[in-house]
Image (tube, rainbow, N blue to C red; front, side, top):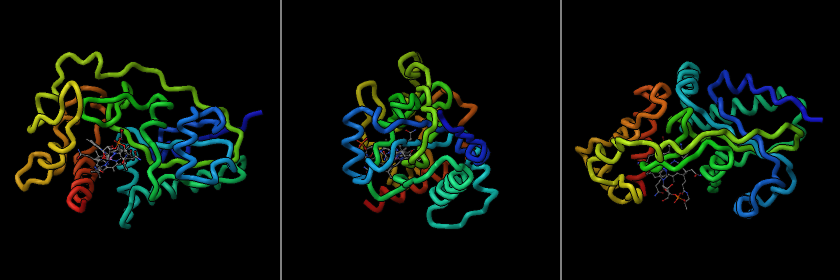
Length: 231
Ligand code: B12
């Protein structure tokens, strides 16, 4: 018999996307990729991907006033740790994201039904638009019912206006591919319009009601610009 997952604690913290997989039912290439990063994978039977969609996480995080060097990671790990401590049916667990190794988050999102490719490269779906991200991946010894894949078509396939292509100042967004070098080089210029935002992501008409608050957009793009400058 399956145990109850009871995600209320996570939902309240804005970690409102959860997808539970049985590890032995994951595609072979996913298991191979995970085994490279996590040699102890076989000690666990389920994998849970947790994400945030929309504004709730940021609003809750701000009120918690976390002033660490990685506030979102710390907040997410702390919330998931409370969740696990309150759930008697998890007998063992291991966080594999956030971590220093690359976990194929968007490929897991594809299996969960959260991820469809967008022309501006970030994953997108009908419900949340591109306003979601992956916050925690945890391996567990547990017996939860697995999550049904989120339904929905790839939003960009039915988009007629393709405003994301028109608005990108350097033509990095095209029908065929996303030109990373153009995007990243322009973002680093002092007078760039993309220092603290992505105009293509903002103009996208999908699920705009979930777009992040201005402060959150600036935060993420400020951090990512710093990473680009450090490369
Ligand atoms: C490295 C990385 C970056 C680097 C990329 C630089 C580089 N060349 O290495 C930096 C720090 C710049 C970055 C920035 C951003 N990233 Co990023 N990034 C990642 C990360 C950790 C690993 C990707 C990787 O190396 N994959 C392995 C290689 C082999 O596969 P790949 O798909 O070809 O990877 C390349 C691209 O993914 C690209 N890249 C990564 N993120 C982004 C975002 C955009 C918009 C673009 C154009 C490219 C890009 O860089 C990778 C290496 O070249 C992933 C998380 C993950 N584990 O997947 C998040 C991830 C892809 N990023 C994400 C996001 C949201 C962003 C930002 C928009 C900022 C933010 N957090 O809101 C920015 C904006 C980018 C821009 N337009 O400037 C999200 C996407 C969520 C979604 N809905 O799909 C992810 C999944 C993280 C998460 N926790 O959810 N990122």
